Amino acid sequence: MSAVIASTTATLPIIETFHSVQGEGAWMGCSAFFIRLAGCDVGCPWCDTKQSWPRDRHPEVAIADLVHAATAAQPQFVVVTGGEPLLHDLTELTNALRSQGLRCHLETSGSAPPSGQFDWVTLSPKPFKAVVPANYAWADELKVVIQTEADLAFAEQQAIAVPETTLKLLQPEWNSPESRDCVVNYVRQHPRWRVSLQTHKFLGVR
Image (spheres, rainbow, N blue to C red):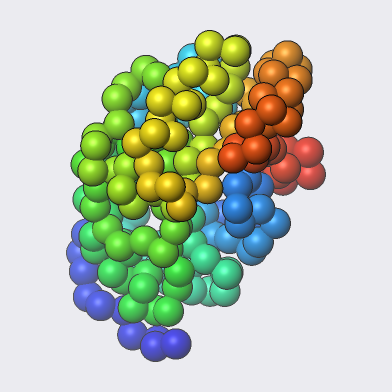
């Protein structure tokens, strides 16, 4: 791994960075360094990171500093999340991370145009703002949060738009026990779907 990071003065608005384990989806349980970007205009009423919505309340951090922190953590991969990370041009960030041999994962609602180079893309569309069509093609996993049975129809609509090989996950809304029963019952009857749980919340870690 190179010790030299490409020179850049670019910055991004950052809520937090931290080293933990991936709590959701196909990479659940793996060592991950999270870069949480500020700014989101999707407006999910059950969002558990509403502090991420306003961009201008969070500090601008140099991309070089983000890459240094990620490299020092020595994770299996780096997760770029938000907020809605695609509100920002992620090209310089992912180029710099990949130049250090770091795998880059993205977690996005898909509501803004794609940018950057990623080794894994989690597309988590929301009914409150439409997905930019180009984002369907690069989805390695489709993760739909289910609050009520009505969300299952939305999930099936989204599944039609992604590649056949995309991993399809239904995730119960954390504060709704009813949604957990709904998801489990649906997956039992529709085996192309899998259950995704927020295991980091059960573990009590970020």
